[in-house]
Length: 147
Image 1 (cartoon, rainbow, N blue to C red):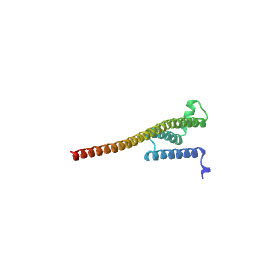
Image 2 (cartoon, rainbow, N blue to C red):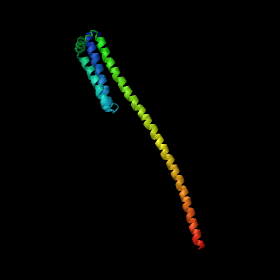
Image 3 (cartoon, rainbow, N blue to C red):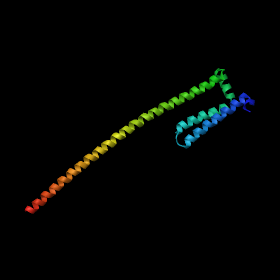
Image 4 (cartoon, helix red, strand yellow):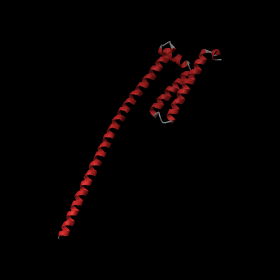
């Protein structure tokens, strides 16, 4: 059945289905709160562009004529390069956030250790203070019994 279809129609159907799958995945990730709004809008834009290119392949032909590039695969290759640059940029941002998260976690661990250390010192000082107060109370009781 697929062999009977015109190659252009088959390409249009496959590209459209791929675009719809991409858009569905993006929407699912947004719904699961795995994808932030800024990136979601960019990914949805890429999905919609892919969908438009799938439904209307003439856009690629007009784009190729406008740019003077007569190989349609080169136009799609340029689209993929733009997508790769976007993914690279997001990866750089993600790496920076990962580094700052690691630094923040280390600082929090150091602060927690300092708090625990101060609590231990405070407990020791309280014990010493209690001993001193007990001794002072014993002295006052001895002075009161001697008098």
